[in-house]
Length: 248
Image (cartoon, rainbow, N blue to C red; front, side, top):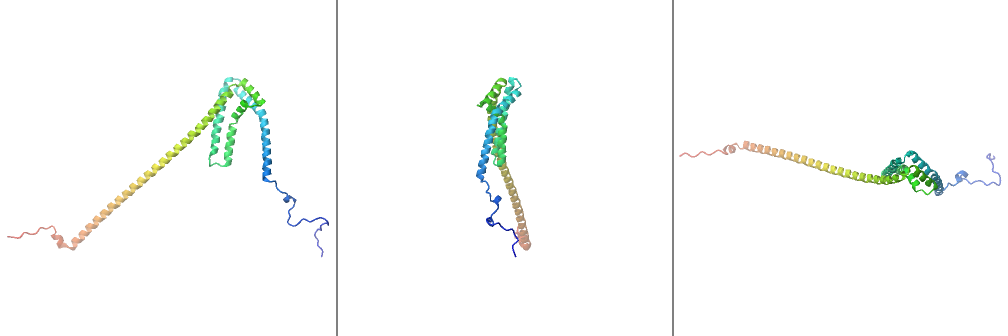
């Protein structure tokens, strides 16, 4: 009886048993190589984004501030004060929250990212004031003609915002420590009062027990005396009775 299975052509080597196919035999990319490629791609994207931003963002920000000033040079002072203080004071407080030990890694990253985004207006202002590109120079020209005082007052209130944020953090920590100490003192005083009340109750119970014991002892003594008197009536009758004097 012959085998009915398909025959293998002569001269073609057969794959050994247990060897997987080509798809499974293909080795995966090493982790270090994947991370290296990913890092290079991310670096290139960041460099390209920075180059594009350095060309476009300063002019966009300068024109936005010019439009907010509205052609009135005096408006640049309160506007600079607002941007400088608000967008440093709030980011400092937000970033400070990331130091809490009970937060996980992703919450901390989110807080740091939020702080960076909140500080972005002041970072854009600094990029215009201190940028070395031609776009930053053109943006400074726009501010010199429309909102000359915005940059100066913005920088002053950036410093004030940072100082105020640090001051709030320091005072807040001092206040929390003070509150903690007050709670500890109140807890200690409460424990002392409870101990004193417990001691007073114990003393009162001891006094009651001593009074009851004294009363019980007095009753037992009276019963004992009464029992002796009943057992010896002659002795009890003669006790305390004066004797008759002899007649002459």
